[in-house]
Image (tube, rainbow, N blue to C red; front, top):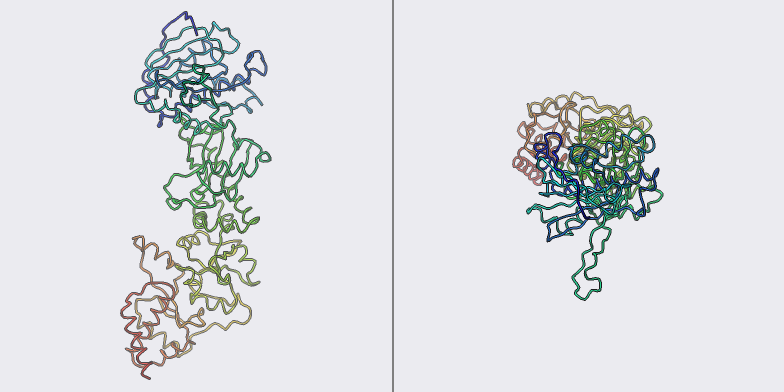
Length: 636
């Protein structure tokens, strides 16, 4: 740069002082954003030149290689960002830098039509990104020359971010733009090479233009190149894996990229890579991790996909693209069709987001369904890590409830193991020909569910029952009323009629005989208001008694969870069912002493509570009564 000419001082258009103050101090939440914005502008300038050079190759001259260079001068306290893109003429400098919120990119896009606009990779469209410079700099100098103009037609723009700026004509030997930031005293951290490199890798690692910085080399007094210009090295990857065709990306590259974005040392279980074109255009690359993060159960933890706009990083956890029950998914989404706020840090409410959210959610569920069919062992690994989170889905995502239900896995009364999980579809395939319902029992543990006395009649008749023992299960089935057209039925709730679902070997429904009627009346007198009613059980074949929830009441597992959480739950009375064929019940019916009758009845009631995993109302009385009966038996 040499002689200067035609120097003048001009005022910003619009209410510049107030607007600049607003942008500098309020628009951006993070100071490091300035470098992202300047790199984006430089990338845009290079893309503009690429477009124009297709029709006017002379614009490139002898320099057809594009790059962005960043350098820092600790002595001068400056950071410089230079590009060899389209550059600006003096008039364009005044219009673009002197008119706040005027975007040269946006204006350039309006002049593109058809395939040109579709293929453009331009990033910034707000026209305020450049002014992020004043977040860290007290003075900014821009030197530029438009491609195709002579060396003497360069231009220098200088401003301290106040109400005016200076523009002067200079001699500039190269096309493009150089921005020099004179940093504020509290921003000297950005003079460090490692800090600048970290910002570039965070926000612009996948920008297609190479970003170069001076390589950090130790001083060498004997170096033969002493005094020569420091070497520059590329610090960004300059390629976005998700923009490449799936056929061109090896599995190893996918896994390497996953570990980079998820900060995970293990390989992902599976991934989904798709490009959507049409009314909405975006690319997504989503991964299913192999291990759950430590904060999986904290629903308030940051989560979501990384959002890019034309390969420039915008947001780390864009939670708008997936529902909360898929919070374990990692990946990126890249689109230029989204409404961002002016600082490009916040997504605006937009129908496009809802459309993308719906499509991406189905994409993840399809990927899981494919994994379950192609590699059951891997899916079992996924289920053990994330199954309970996926169970939140039917309540949160009505549109995909059936698809989510197909991905759920449960133990059953015939699976033989807590970990031999079965799908509802496989349960339906094994149902008896005349079975019309999917039966389940809820308990606090696998063993309690498997040993539940409510299953006795089902074992006798060879009917499989789904075992629910996760804390979320009863809440899940309250939102998942049916599967494949077959209602889900709690075997411990309401009346049980298996006469229509049998193998022909069932006993006829037990109607209370006269002697049983008398026993039921005595028991109702003993329990009084403690139970809803007392009846002869159709469920029991081995146990003497059980407790049943009324049809419209809250299940006991859900009740216990709410009570443990300190929430008030409404009072409920349950039905006390007895097995009139059991020796203890027969002995009870013959008991003439009302005191002994009451104590034995209470023992049977407490046994029913223990069998379902509930707490005894009066453990001391249960132990006392049980000991008395044991002593009597021992004395006989």
